[in-house]
Length: 180
Image (cartoon, rainbow, N blue to C red; front, side):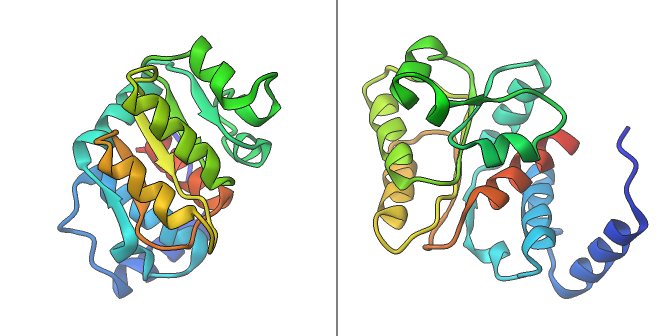
C-alpha cells in the first residue's frame, strides 16, 4: 500500500473543495484528480476524454504485468513502480516496438504527436491492439488532430481535446492507474 505524504493529502483536500469529480467513474476520477494535482489547474477536469471501461482495461493490463510502452524516457523516469519500454530509444522506434508487442500493452505517449498518429494508424490497420493508449502530447501543430484521430479510431484511450499536454501529465495518468 502506498503511503501518502501529508502535503499530498492536503492538496487533494483543497482540489476536491474546488472541483467536483464525484460524478466520474472511480478511475476517471483518479486520473483527473492526479492530473489536476500535478498541474494545479482544475480546468483539466473538463478537457479530458476517456471512457471508464477503457481506463479499466488499462488498469487490468497494468495490474496483470502487461508491457508499459512510453515514447520518452521522461515518462519512464516518473513511473518508478515498474519498468517501461521507451520506444523513442528502440532501434526502429515505435513501429519496431509495436511489432514486438502488438497486443495488450498500455501505451503512454506525451511528447510527439507523430507517435500518436502512427500508433493510431497501426491500430486502424489491426496491427496493434492496445489495452489502453494514453495520448497527451502538447503542441500547436498536429497534437489536437492526432488525439482526435486516435479517438475517432475507437481505440481505448485517454486524451484531451486541446493543445495542452506533455510527458508529466502522461506520467500522472499512468501513476493514477497504478495507484488506484
